[in-house]
Length: 148
Figure 1 (cartoon, rainbow, N blue to C red):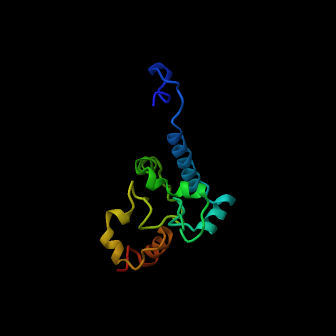
Figure 2: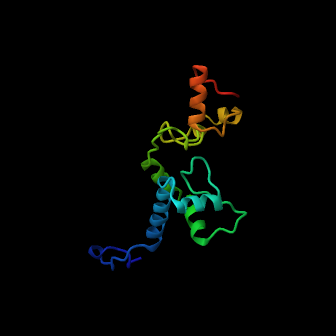
Figure 3: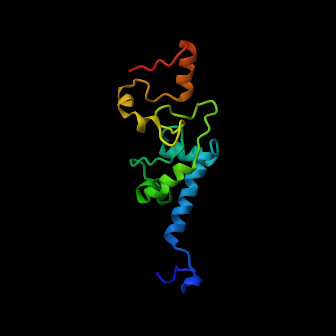
């Protein structure tokens, strides 16, 4: 490990390739979340599927995924701490609410309603709806009327 120490500490100053790789994989997570309508993302989503509003990569095991995509999608398993850091730094802007899944995405803070109220989620009949869909129901009925 002397090689990856800085030159000031008596090493050669070579970067840790594992850490660099994880950072580059995390950059793809960021691009996946932010490149809403990019052609490459459309192809990835049609091939491997997408979860929620398309904020995080998903891996469909039934389809033969490429080695690169497996590495990108498995980052949360390999380095949970880095993914948590990423989640803390990313802020979701609601906009029209079309891409935001009401229960799953952290649109109210750092955690989704799923994590805060798992029992309510399990009872809800509208657990796949977007924020936009539930907001439209709110406007039509004059109040929050979640169905359980």
